Image 1 (cartoon, rainbow, N blue to C red):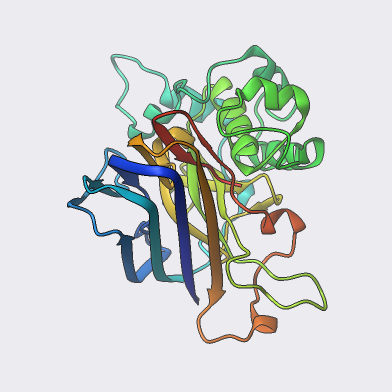
Image 2: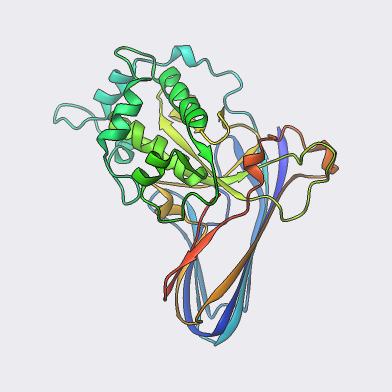
Length: 328
């Protein structure tokens, strides 16, 4: 069990004043059996004229807010403290059933009970059905193979076959382009893994959150130098909570270093912060994320992962009237 504090700052500065803005944020951690939310708050400046909180269709906590007063800058700061336990500490992957058995249970049939997880087996805006992804996945999903073992191997292959490159893709890069480049960031790796799993008839969720990291040897952990993260959950009835969470960027099952924010069909459902604005012109975004163990010195931030891929900053894109913050 470990207590982790997360602070996430998003600071927009605009070329000209924004006259009107509507925003949606997914920045409050999700409560689960293995993640207890001890504290969470959201600070927005300037103060919104209207702010509402509710749950979406997937059970995620979301915040809507509107600014109708002209403003040249926007700061959204979230702070949370969570207690994490290792949900897979005693999970035996060999006990999972054959992947075809799960696939068949998810398929629609009049005489078969409805499985709620089946809604994550269909295509989604960022993850279409592609024969290229099925062909890639079939190497791991051989006939009769254990679902958990096949999924873990597939995630490991993506980790090995793809290069982590923040400059290779953008937030709206099509999944097939990232797949053909064999390069991208955690958002791309997660979409590719989801696409492969769904192509085999399985259900897979996109999970957004944060990852506790360690600085390189001989250096000090810098405040604001972390980033948001993304990984995948595949429906596996024998796994704790019936979902097996895989981090293809780092080739691990999720554990007490992964702080979960939200789940959805793909990135489009759970972008940390997005909005529609009138005015503003060009803008700049500065993002600072700090993930740390409560009360620990920088050199005591175990059990964080040390993969250099984890210290990348977030990227962001904008059209004339929309803003979307992506995940590294």
